[in-house]
Image (cartoon, rainbow, N blue to C red; front, side, top):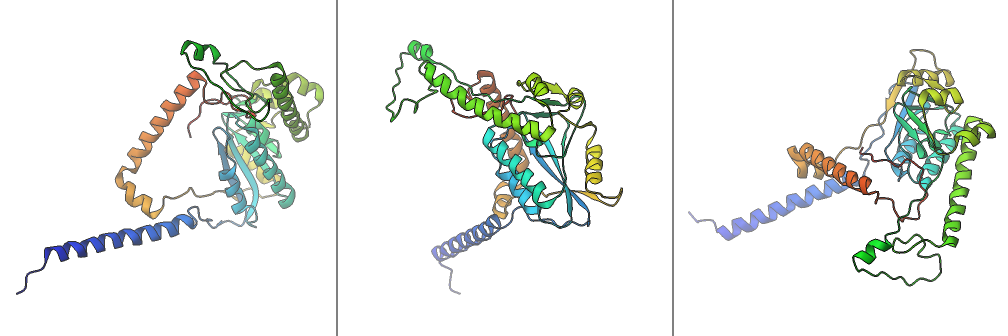
Length: 323
């Protein structure tokens, strides 16, 4: 009987191995570029869609993607937006606010915001597109304002014997640099931008909450209120739970009690390749990743370096947050 050539066996196993890898990657790519977040079918003819807006708002894509998936579903009769956010960049917050306003205008479906613990700044800006705002008594809400933060590290560079220079095309190109003091014309330049953005925020609150100028002048100064105070002053509508918020939304949508359900969009599922690569270690790696993220954010929060010297409009109250 003829013995098998070991090199032939190794060659065959190699082809088989790489072939399996190729097939796996092909199907993984197919699944990855397909719908990792499939549209779950709404089982009830009267559904209340629940969407979450959590953490610091620096990106609107994730929220808007889910909103656009279900906005035209005939079973969706209203939108519950659960907000737990300290604020964030103005651009994404304004984008979400306008998308919700357009949703309400085009679909004629009501929107209710529910916030159990925190709805500040950019989160509150987003809330202005809703019909009603429901909060808990202890919820921190408000912080109507805009902030830009800078640090002058000139003396630190001198101590470290480090010199920094820039070559620019204009006098404002390096405005906000940390290695020198801010000029007066730069300060006026940034202040005018902050004032303009604050004006937009203030107008959104005035229109969304129907609050008079006198009240706005007194409370739209960046301060935080409790949920109970916000309701008393007109910055929110009711103190209650999520169930209370859903009931209010059902009433606005003219839905009969018991003839509707709360629908939550499914979370993103890992791709086929991700499942193979992570295996049973996925949970452990996730915990480890979150721990690293917490440590990193705690350090940057203590040193307050994460937002310094960036020409960003920030809603005040960008606190540490881990989703």
